[in-house]
Image (cartoon, rainbow, N blue to C red):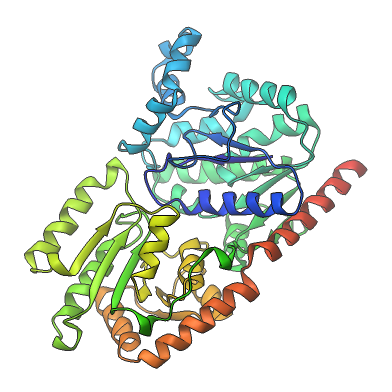
Length: 431
């Protein structure tokens, strides 16, 4: 059973994609898997979740109950209305759906689990699991869900596994007085977990600095994709086009790329180059995107920049078919970045800052280059370096596709995950 916070389909959600691709691979390996969405639906069209599986901890309901105690005594029909699909889809588009600042109390309450304000929702979730499922293993999508672990472990008596990916980015923007309390709670609640799975060696090392995780409980399993799901085309077969595929936000560095593109276009040698942007946004990003579009307009580049609204499946495939390199200059780096695999599987080389797990991924795959520091000037120089060498771009393209096949194929990664599941089951049986 995989418990996964959803994005509601309003933006390109790397964690949602990671979990869904692992679930797909587990099912292909003839394992039965149930996806349990939390807060919001996973995607705009969640075709592989039965209508019998509700969204637990509905985002609107738990927020109102946390902020306004009167809602804790509201009749059941109020919860049902607030947790309806139309309401949750509406919430996904609103400001604050991915914002940590202002949700410090909610985060702490969730980590307190049965001792927090959401204890009734926790009981409802586990009651549903007891009635409808008989899991051998429960897998939490990230460490911010560790408040669930004790009750899951106690009532269902099965191993609890927890993925680790970018929790630090959520916590780092909180009030300083709250940050250490959250880390301490996560460390404490982690005692109820049988195994932690970091998405890269870089992030495993980072999390050992923040949480007290025993070495024998910590594993690294890379994110994976099915390379055959992506159409491979060499960059030399396309127009020179830079792509951005991720949530359109300040944190993920879209403005750095736009500023680099503006610098690039001042050189007549790159007069033909375009910039294509996709990945969606939340309400919090509206002002940022408005400013980005104004910057593009003020530099007379409207015709050279295209925004793609469809970033799921067919729309994403069309996007990759139209770009010759991709850059997502995340300000602080990331624990992984599934868009790198999707790009390289499509034959699109990547240009990333030398931050987070990006150097680790590109060293393994050979599908792109890194640059530093993470400034528009350094990025513009790195893009020029790549665009000025068409043969080299094609080599990165072939290497990247081969690297994904050899190191990041989801079928191979899921075997490692199953092995962790099996060892956890044996350990739980011994206890």
